[in-house]
Amino acid sequence: MSDVIEAVNGVIWSPVLVYLCLAAGLYFTVRTRFVQIRQVPAMVRALKGGGGSADGVSSFQALAMSLAGRVGTGNIAGVATAIAFGGPGAVFWMWIVAFLGASTSFIECTLGQLYKEKDPRTGEYRGGPAYYFEKAYRHTRAAGFFKVYAAVFALCTVLATGLFLPGVQAQGMASAITGAWPSVEPWATALGVTILLAFIVIGGVKRIAAFASIVVPFMAVLYILLALIVLFVNADRIGEVFSLILSSAFGTHAAFGAILGTAVEWGVKRGIYSNEAGQGTGPHAAAAAEVPHPAKQGFVQAFAVYIDTLFVCSATAFLILSTGMYRVFEGASAKGRVLFEGRGDLPSAAEVGPSFAQHGFNTLLPGAGAAFIAVSLAFFAFTTIVAYYYMAETNLAYLTRRLKSPFTARVLVRALQLMIVLACAVGAIGTSGTAWTLGDIGVGLMAWINIVGILFLQRPALAALKDYERQQREGAEPVFDPAACDIPNCDFWEKR
Image (cartoon, rainbow, N blue to C red):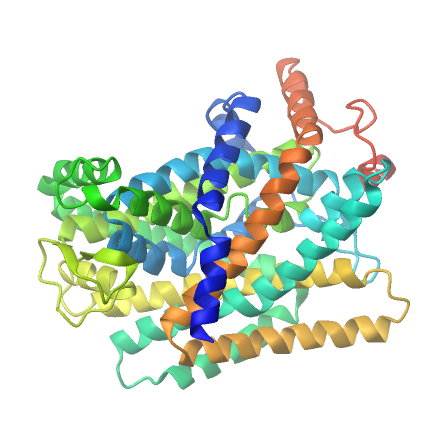
């Protein structure tokens, strides 16, 4: 079974997907005229405005929900894995995919707002790729095809976020906790996660948003600050770290010349796993926000990509590289030959993953690094699992929204809640290799379907951007009218 899973992952994460993600980001960057640079002030302003309502959450809560999904195991264990198998140059390619991906995130999250709808059962806003794939082409001859396309995405997302991806987060959490406190067995972590998760997810989107808006900013800021302190202590190595990243990224470093392609692959793969730009997860949180114009939430979610990768992932990368607590392996496997050893005293038994960061923090606070990373990863991973559940529930709601029996819908929701709880329990006591491979399959499937789809569905998002910037130039607070932008099928906005 392990060989089958690896084979499937190899097909999904072929170099074609890696370069598709980069090419799509570059294309949207050009088409939006570098929106991720021009509109940074609007991104920051958008975080301050936009209060919630009885049906939707505020822009900041939507950002927090989105960051809950983005900031997780990938920001610590994922960065360590990228360095171990792709070399320090993988960090550079994570930066590139974040910069380009911010424009992709703007497109998909603006689409999420454009085609959102109100759930008739709960009154909450729902939206995401499945919704915009079906609605955008409803007036065309291709309506039938895109309805099926939307259903395929929704089904893949339920499986990915409800079954495959939660296990990665739970496994990373259990690994870090056991590394810090060996007496805590993985089953104990699994039990704690399942109890807390059940309490949060049963409360619905409002409770999820409230939880995320408190926990995520606090832990992200604390983690970044402590990582910066470690970097400051090792300030004399900053120039060396930058040189190592750049020389490794372009194959000019003697030790990493042979793995240039691997650096690109792991940088892009772990970059997308972390910041999720193009994967189709961000639009779910974006659609839940109460905003006067769809582009406004597009700006917020583009900024979320920066926070995730340029801040949190970079903090982990500089922590590991500046302390030298890493090693690089040949053949993208910890069983391969060691190509390069960092300057630190990383124990030979240290596994690829959170232990790199734990030993890095130990150089500042001997003995406390393992505990701090374990606590950080526990919060990051748990909020990500909560966000995954919300995405899975949103796509289940899409697939079942025409069911006439409310009882059947409730039973399916309870089945989904049970599935994600069991996935976390199994992931916590399972092996990291299988968990990460299943997670990569989930991310890859969603990315393939969503990126190809939004390449055909870019016009409405670009029209919304043009309308926002027109009103912005006129000095008005942008308010959206789909008829004025000639964007059909925006049912929510038309009624509003």
